[in-house]
Length: 359
Image (cartoon, rainbow, N blue to C red):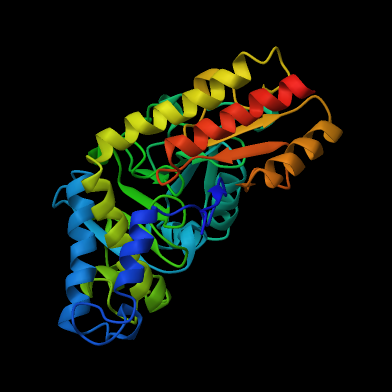
């Protein structure tokens, strides 16, 4: 069977080698005579998977022992609520930088919990760039500063991260493991798995231990970071198969040469598409300003809605999947996460050139 040329924004492409490995052991994992999906989450065989995933992520991102690695459910969207519920304590303010729809949603949930502020926003510019921040505007009673590191809908990405005296929190759902980062810059990093880490249903939280505290009595047990920290993310049944696939993806990243190699490959893939856009004499127009361009989500428009429909129709006929822009902005979007092969991106670049010539 021929694999699709998968440019979906999420759930997104998984490494073919990971899928093959999972398939090989689907009915009999580790000689147990059971699938990972059938193992008790309290069993030794599953424990090796669970702890192994945490250890492998710690190794790949050089995460120090000052941080907990939590494996949660509810997607990144649940973190929009958990973060303020746990960290936005009385008398504190949650500061937010708006760079797209997901940061707007994060702010919306925080407002339900306590005081918030918009430190900076690029909304007036249709979220075409990452706004500059005046750190001196941060008030002394700030609980945290929240950013969305990569914006899937608009195709923008933070190139450097702000530094301040209050904890920096980042939603890295769509660019975690895509490049090297200094985890010590952050108080908390969270990421839905379905773009660069594994399948949907799992959320990874990397959190400074000193931010984990005894929750207020009114906070539900399942919404407290302390619950997961005290129980190795095994307070209740975790998404065991998703965590197994996370472990396989992390092993794959290591086998490819680690995050440094993945980063260079992602830069190569993004350059293939941005070069076509920049040399197209405005036939293709990138949404993001050049200094804010994402290496994960390349967003662009064509001269007309009719051309866009024709482009997407012919692309589908050629086997390309998931190139429609988000319904809120239209146009086209190529999501080129870690698992998307360079060859698939090169084929898309050639298709884009061909389509322009025939038009």
